[in-house]
Image (cartoon, rainbow, N blue to C red; front, side):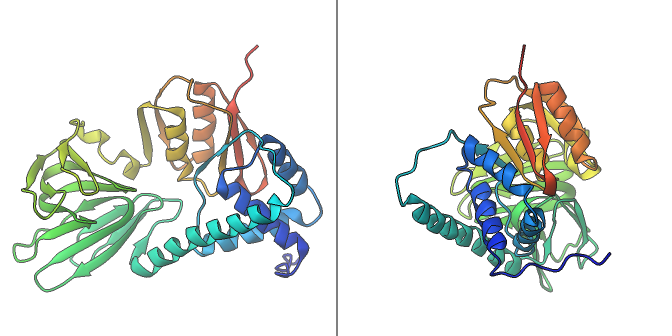
Length: 317
């Protein structure tokens, strides 16, 4: 049987699929709307149209938030639907444009999995899921710009060309080492696996030196501060396919795990009262990891087509 053809952009079902996709991405769907979406999916041709639009969305580099918190339903005034659709269209543009700009700037990007990159000088970069870097090499300088996410670096020594990772104004410079740099919105963190690095949050700051197991972090425009010392085996455990969770909230755990899944994770209800999580999960089996996380945290997981997973607190008798 030949694969189904791509639906026409003018097909009303396609328009509905885009509408649902933007609603999921906006995080404003109420319980009643979520039930309507589940019912809509079973209609003839609806699943195919939604999957087509989701793949198109991903091909543009856009990805909604990993975890979408479903809010209680809100009553809308007459005529508010048009305004809501217009707002979601603006939201989509705001989300897609930064992703397209990132794609133009990045030399290497990782998707849902971990990506290994061989740099021109023989150094190695391992990008975590969703990470992106730009490579700027010259005769006497080697600079990696971390655009998003986190990356592990193992550097080939060169006396005539220092190896630097820049994140905004911040700099992490290799001395003789393997290390990790992560970027999360305005937050930057660096931790050394072996050897030494030096870091500076801004050009006008002096260098802070870090050895194996030591960490430092700063907010954009702030001052670098030392973090907790880590065991060497815990540094960049994700590079070995392990997700280590230490005293993490359920929301944090779902957000971390969700980066390694191709579908959405939708959260129903408030999970903040659940106890923190201490666990080690395999990243090469994200679905089994999600089930293990749910079993250990008192969650229920309902899977829908297209990789959508609905997570909520399990009913307690």
